[in-house]
Image (tube, rainbow, N blue to C red):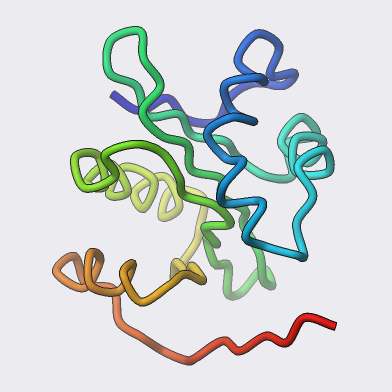
Length: 133
């Protein structure tokens, strides 16, 4: 099951969101957990929870970026346990993006993401390189 567009404030699920996203946010020197939570609570980013019964299996954070004539749904974070078991739920997020007027979807991730997502139509468009200063 996927729950999308959590209505701010996150309240009782904030601790769970923080725990699930912690490894992903820690790997990105341009992100800060407190700022990310604030963006979710302001509605600037959308937090999607993937659940199995009462358990949260994963969390996806998206943001719509671009210009009015070209909107893109950007996946900022996608993390959790057993991702291969619930990755198919990204299709629901894609459908939501289409309903919001987005004509593309993008994420930045390690090579393993491309291997997992290629069967669903994702293609490598560029290489992102970073140097930590």
